[in-house]
Length: 413
Image (cartoon, rainbow, N blue to C red; front, top):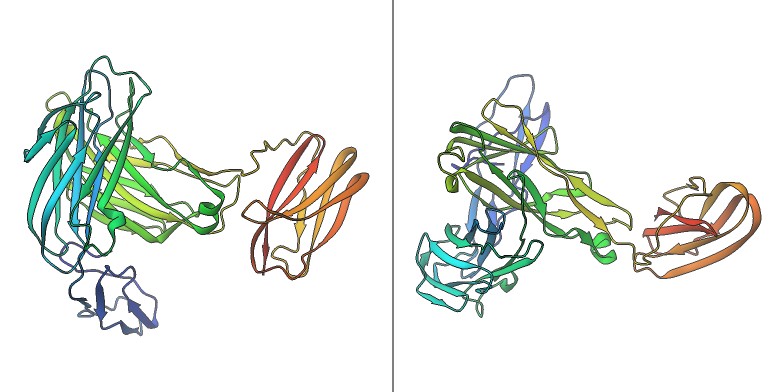
């Protein structure tokens, strides 16, 4: 990650190394494509290995992200932030809209008052949004004291132009907020708690928000948030969407994201409740090849100055079981697959507590059964399943008896 001034440092081993830019911004090319650096010993440095990001002309692309900065609680304030940015290479001017449920929320104010406020639709114009420029707009609402706990508030932010936009899919941002009672102000949420079979197999972007609040008794000068990225997520497809304050982002220990909010001067909630909140919003793509039963679970740690960290809840995303079958293991010992990865065949081995009839199935990631065999009653099985020159990829082996079912992943190479 580079700093805000574009500088960066990388620690490299000895001998020759090739340095290139990963995750190039859209509509930009790097010149040069890479640098070669050589180190013949310890404590050597090389400087001046810079990259010029050259824009591709006439690329129009604006993006908006809507974030709920605070929970929605009956009788309290609800604050949203609209983050809009120019990802393209042209200067753009147009309009921004925020649509909300006027029967469930009362609009109070905004950092820039809307040009139009009509039946749950707020509209602004923006001028001369420069390439790579990011702007924020904060909105304040009141939640009625009569709001029903557990009900959902859906709001939609949208930005124009759309007709000439290279990627209209990010011109709209939907934020769903559940009305809650008592809450922990330091939390982590994910927009998708379940993935379909296809999403698990192919990978899917997950949108995370980490919220924090200074509920202490004095101003917090530095806030550090850490989040260890699980192995099911791809750090190479990580994207920051928005944040409440200026930050520095580092990757430590291989997969630990660390945001440092230095000199944040975050007031405590007793002195200034509205200003005591902060947040981080990012998205990251799950790796391909997840199967039913797989789960992506992680949490964040929030450090206020030198205090012990506040640990958030777990944000959990699971891959759905397309067969909607609950797996019970009352009579099935964990079965084995070998070799795995496999080519022409795979051995399925299992032992039972008593003589049992069993069925072994080979299923693809669309939930389609490719082969199925019923095995005779016995207290163990050693079945050689032919793979019939199936295409390379990830499959499921299911072992079923009258008392339950188990599933394991099989890789064919």
